[in-house]
Length: 456
Image (cartoon, rainbow, N blue to C red; front, side, top):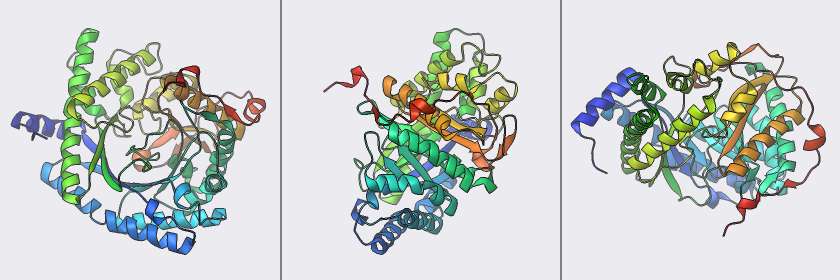
């Protein structure tokens, strides 16, 4: 890759110092397929030793790159092969799987990464006994660990939606909320339910190392909502062509920074470079908000008519700019719309401009889905399953990744606030439609793949 020009360096420095540009994460993906065995103690030993061996220099190298280029790298993370596969032969009980979660947590602490993802199961068409055991162990696993993140893929465009898994995940989300109620149900913030989950996503809580990946890879996630907003402030009132070109050019510059960091990390660690994920991932900091970008486009508030169109435009132009900047753009690239992590979204909810239903509509055109949304603690498990099914259907029919990260906060009602701290922020508890979908969710079986899935 050509090095950045002097002009690009000056521009980049300005984006870092004034516009909150950062590399959100360097994520090392590690395959644990060679750790599989029938002896649980041996599997735990191999998992710990491989993670520590491969990732021992990850944090150090990340800090060295920060110093060399002056680019903040907010998180250093690890993703691993879905643990339902790794532990399938050795784990006979939920407690067996929880022991693997604790091993992941211990390894993450040893190498000093922020999070480790991959306590996961891929059950889009059906569940093996081991996969069901892992899923049922998630509440205990997330309550017993600090840095472990979990994800479950319940459907895809090619296979349809596994409604047995969707029904189970409604129960698991509720149980996870209960198991971590002393932390405002924080465990749910580390649990994502996917449709069409990508194999190379560097962002938590949904990251896992897909079985099609190399033994070890480096994936980088870049974020820059503040950079995009600042660029749009300079073209207020201009037409859509100018708007699109500005977003696209800005995304190009941001992705170049990610490519630079990814290549440097790859060379220093002696690990292949995987992908750059250019996702406008907001933080609770003022000026680092996707909602504010949409409002800069001309919306009085996120949630107003036109919001979905504005988000569709933003997502598309971000991807177009990113693809021009790197040959390997992957993961989820686009725009995230989490509530708790975006002060602009929080403000819109508080002024009653943004509802759960409007957020669902927006997920048709954003990177992921219903993300970091707190709902009342007495929300029924079947209702959560219904929300998961709705999002999975959007992903399945539209051939895109969708996900749900709901927090049914124990003891909280609509209008209350939950506090997570750090990048996870805080969230107003949003009301949920009170009508039941239990009769639908409890039918069992699978929703078939859509007609347009039959391509080969």
